[in-house]
Length: 338
Image (tube, rainbow, N blue to C red; front, side):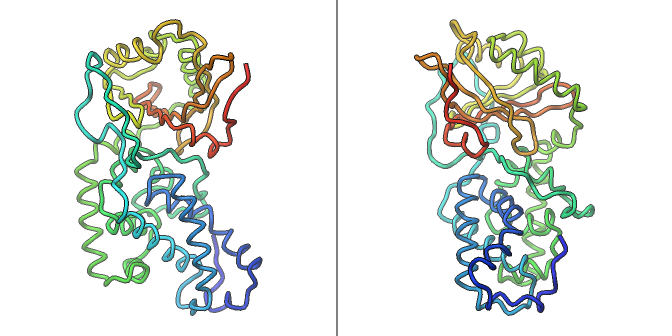
């Protein structure tokens, strides 16, 4: 995005409609930024709106020393940091502890805001992407990267996103966070070191997914397996070391055999053919589905959002976010008729 020089923009004289139109040009990338920081699509949307309202209230304080874009990022980033100080760290089950054993009882759900959420919105396009960035825009929104990113303290997280995703210079980050340049460089070094220790989590994201036609074929097979409760059909699509989780349940499972045991006695247990319906969505730059479960009247109620990670032609991870409140963010109905 080519932005006019800061000195040529006088937002203090704008009315609310003019300011809203200007701010809207940045809302898509600011929403993605808030999501990277917070890990929650719901909190990201709320924080974006709060940031834009705060920018409007403080428009007279904008002196043109930076671009409008940088000024809005400063407001949004610091709002996120303030919010993160009051919240527990978000993660996914696979990052918490060792894989679970399917013969053991499934632990109760943890319904506090401790889980990452899937992201439905488009990320900023290639015209806003710096080819020299250490982390590409597409990688920066994927679940594996976010899981590692949220191991970082809030300020380190902000520094890494601004430097390595958005390609800001250290002095620009220092101005946004009211820090010194040396402190920014130190925080960036610590953040990169932490992420390097968890590089195995990121490696899956660099593996090429199938070509479009092949991917569609695999996804069609996947949907058929779910909707007909075909355990063998599902397992045939998985890598040998695939992982499976369903937050807010804290347990997770690894390997075809254990995943097969789990789904056979739970989601595909009993007379399960026709129990599930799936609608395709795009989530975190990956294939995903809105998942609906059969109700007593023969229709289907919203169950949650599922994100599927491929390695080559096989599925490496299935994460099902069991939260019907996520469904509207993906443009899906709350229920399907019989």
